[in-house]
Image (cartoon, rainbow over all chains, first blue to last red; front, side, top):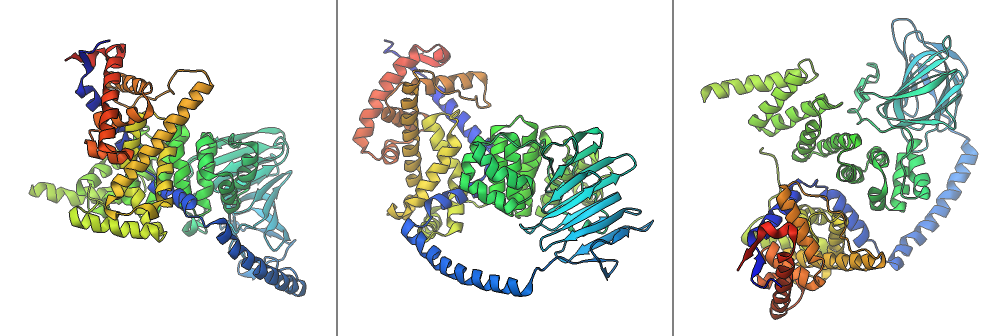
Length: 414
Length: 200
């Protein structure tokens, strides 16, 4: 026994300081924690929970009866579409004129723009979507996500199944090649050499031929829709993972939410994930799964859940490429939520991951915007310099130069 | 960077603010939950780290558990001004349960190894010391370990430790005396801590 020896106090103080530094560095996701705590702590008691269900059951029975009666009388309410301002007819072929894209506008708000020379046919209209045949050429689709949407584009032996997303597709009957480029959301492509179907998500591209193997690449997900769609294109999605679904906590969990997300049914995917235990999934899924879960939550308009999934990805797989994507996604979520300080922290971390990360220009540009709006001249100048050094011809180069120009007289006065 | 933050008001304003928060929590107001988590997240994490060690792999789950318990049991908080120390005591209690649970599992799997602790980004010397300190604390009875961590690592005074552990000051004093004796004896024989051991 060493009764006359003891650990120096400074050792314990160093341990405490080390812990404090770690606490300061840990990513914050207070909204997600609060949301989960409220869900667990404040759910009503079992007895109280039954009351609204019983009331709802009565209302639901009445409504179901009324709806059935109405539907029986009114029949199906299939979508309609317009071509160049005129009502389109299912089955008729349409060819986009040379020199101008041709939009097909559907009554649910979906727009499919056919590039000059493209030939198509709306083969079938239903109350929840349409089946189009792309005979040749390129289209850019903005299919409105309604939770019920069922769309498909047939190109030769291939079929692209869609429930709500933005993507481009090009079919060349001469070479038998199909190219699909995802801007947002997810589709499933079926056809020769694609087995039971290949899922594509935002930021991915597919090239496949009748006698060629499928090649999936991750692309920079810039909004490249034609002017017709430009106003509705949202900020670019973070690059997604490979198309294979993630290894989920359990096979049941995978089946319940991952498949729904893959087919673009994000609200249902999120509901399924909630049933499986969202936090549990955040602890168990691999990097691919977490990215898909975060994307699904974001598209289902649940930024808190999206934050939770992306933050888990950053925390658990800090050295994985996909955690870098999650850093950007977190920055964007905070930016969209009007939390510029938090957004700036994520974007700074994202830019620190590599010299030129795939969405570096977007992150650097948003940093310039954030600091400039916050009136933080010093940080804005620093961000503007970084931006111009890396992206002198970038979209926000003008803003960056304006920031530097505004700062120059102030520096001269000093 | 001059960006909006939500600093905690000090003094009387701070107490008034806590009162409003607690009232909001009791009425299940989401804004109140969001503010409490935002304000006390670092505090809860720090307390859990003191008790468990920096490399505790379950730390995020435990943080979630602390705030869930806080929201579920807010009606038991009699004095709104005690919000911070109340959260501290929940964090300590939650950490204590986790340590006991871990001990049971370790016994079940016949392994004496502590869980893998990813080193925080400190110097190698400090990281080694931190790992060694918590490996030694794992060998103390859980109540003594917690009292020691809060007093010696965090620097709480006796009354704060007593409040955090939910016991009296004399009880804390006894636990601390035993813990210090055991801990320093173990530390003196620990190779990783040799650079930090001093003769008294």
